[in-house]
Image 1 (cartoon, helix red, strand yellow):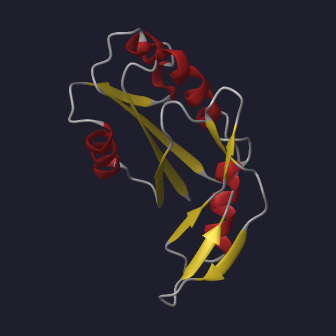
Image 2 (tube, rainbow, N blue to C red):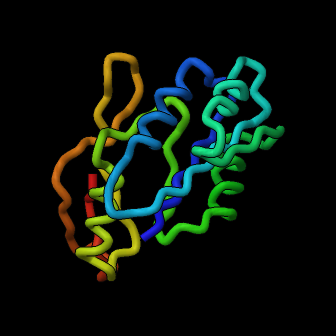
Amino acid sequence: MKISIITPSFNHARFIRRTIDSVLSQTGDFELEYRVLDGASTDGTVEILKSYGDRLQWRSEADNGQVDAINKGLRTATGDIVGWVNSDDTLLPGALARVAAAFRAHPEAEWVHGGARSSTSTTARCDAGSARTRTSGRGGIRSRAC
């Protein structure tokens, strides 16, 4: 199972390393494809992206904002599962393993979501709670994975 994660960014050098590290440190029974779409930052973000070498894919170019960057990333994603993490947010350890496990346990699910935990630095974190599923109002399965 391949998970594609997109991070949109613009002038977030003060946050982006923590975000990238939280994604790249994810382990589990999945392959990770990670892309950062930067909107031509001028604050040192590009230098930080370069420091990761081939551990992630990135592009820095002018765009039309966060939604445009996310959409560009989603259009090029090749994963079985796709999602995004904003450049000032982080994933808790095990978050993507829980996502993969939820989709394996419920292959009929179309999407999963997690809770958020606010930290003292005002960044949101995916709460590492247990996976839960329930039926949505449209007859589908809704899974809470992380």
